[in-house]
Amino acid sequence: MRRRLESLLKPSSVLIVLTGDEVRIRLEVPGEPSLYLSGDTVLTSTVSEFVARHRPQICVVPAGGARFDMGSDIIMGIDEVIELTRLSIGTVVANHLETLSHCPVTRAALALAARNAGVESRLHIPLDGEVLHLPLTRLHDLEGLADKRHGLVDRAAYPLTFAQEEFPMSLAPPGKR
Image (cartoon, rainbow, N blue to C red; front, side, top):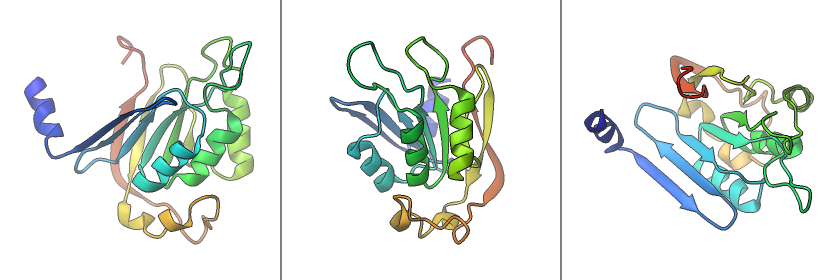
């Protein structure tokens, strides 16, 4: 297993960033969509710039709007997830929803906001234990989007199309896959 993983990752690009604000991982493997895994963070200019520069095809971000009794939000809430989805060129997967008492954002509220913002086709809001099979976005279909990010993209003029391949991504807890 380890040898197979090493051979898979050799021609790839893995970037792990540890900052004062967040941990983020960008994973690129030939033939697979690029993946951005965000640690617990709010939508900062650093996060926005990272997504704009690296153009991940799949972003997995915390969306529960968590906050402690004192202080501000510690992970993204509804507005920030919608904004990140607009900035992104691909699919966004929302996690950390309805998980703890300090995560007030519900799946229903996020889904309604996504529908109202017109991003519901690119924002996936999985159920607990749900396994997502995300389509591989063809890079050539995304040309021109990176320069038109920040909410200025005319989605009708730049439709996202998908190849037939699927990228299985398990969000199920261990033992339930």
